[in-house]
Image (cartoon, rainbow, N blue to C red; front, top):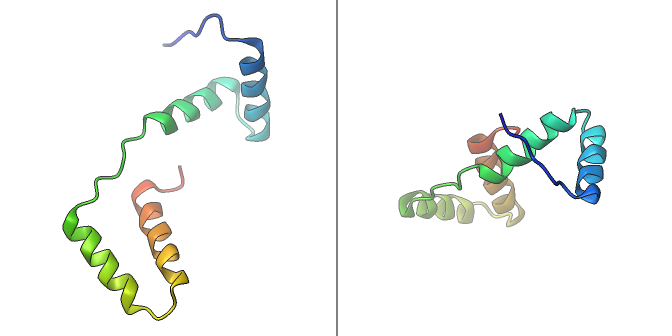
Length: 80
């Protein structure tokens, strides 16, 4: 359980509005924000980075580098 006291009114209002936009309760929205903020950073190994770069540069379309990177991040993080 977590209680947050003395939350400034503008922050409280912004949380209320954000929760409404996302179709969540304020509590669920606060959980989402905290989960996102505390998510561990991705551990990139040198070997994994080298393999990613080799694969990316074999593709003739540079735009696919970004798509592959995003797909990799998505597979690690899911829809969160």
